[in-house]
Length: 104
Image (cartoon, rainbow, N blue to C red; front, side):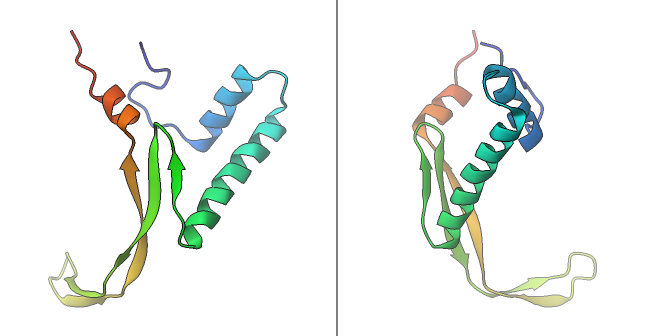
């Protein structure tokens, strides 16, 4: 099976265009709104300390990074890096299997 976007990144507008092509009964504006709502709900769940799980694709969660001493890569000078929260993605089993299909 050949991927429609093989080797190139997919951006939000391309996703919307693909969904519009596959669903001619919906307007592009409706699809943009739907994609926006889904992404916003995912962000809100992560903001509130939740987890977003998309079966077969993967799960998004938030991890905490402690404050640490870093360094400026140009000058080598030490800098302090404050504590922060970062998104973490763990791929699902189906996604891993599809990415690692043996090509004959």
